[in-house]
Length: 257
Image 1: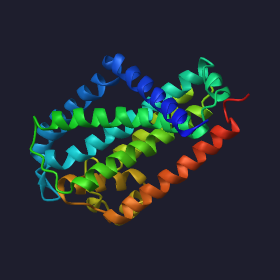
Image 2 (image 1 turned 30 degrees about the horizontal axis):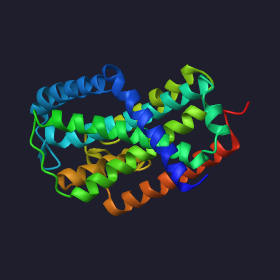
Image 3 (image 1 turned 90 degrees about the vertical axis):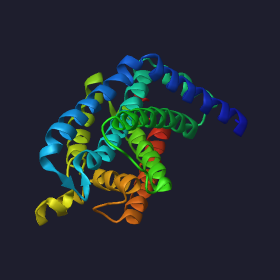
């Protein structure tokens, strides 16, 4: 199948994915907007006024990058895991596999759909944050790069989760028991420099710490970790997960029973 046809197939999947989450926007775009607004009001305004400054910024400004990144992570992951599992459940994945569409095209199409929703929700949360605080982007390229890489990484993670899932309950296990603790302990609401030495060292094994801090560096110019090292680690991890997901799709893991 020529590159032109692969491109058409890729576009078809991406358009289908975007239309899917836009069509059901009260389920996909509205809940994260409401949830993050509550975070801004409760943590930023009510609790933040008692905490004062953190990292040289008022508390509301400090938590905004983390909350934006949290919404990107949850929505890029959630979009792919639910969509690809539905495709498996309805057996329509079999039509894709017998078509001339390559495994790479299928994977890239679903990942691009997840990235689109993650970035869309991230933009909505960023716009909402402007009602509560001022934001000035300090490093535009770093900001864009880390958001896109994070959305890609967690979209691939959602794809792998969907391939292993045998029932709808399996789709919720990783977001509930892995993603949520990682994001809450990823430096969203605090600087890891405030932690005792032992817990700060433990935090450095949490990949979300690097994503949140790199994004915070892009927006505010401050970070608890090395930014270039963090970007390199995210790129390597994304490439590794992509290779794993592609290998699984080629082998038909969770699909060819």
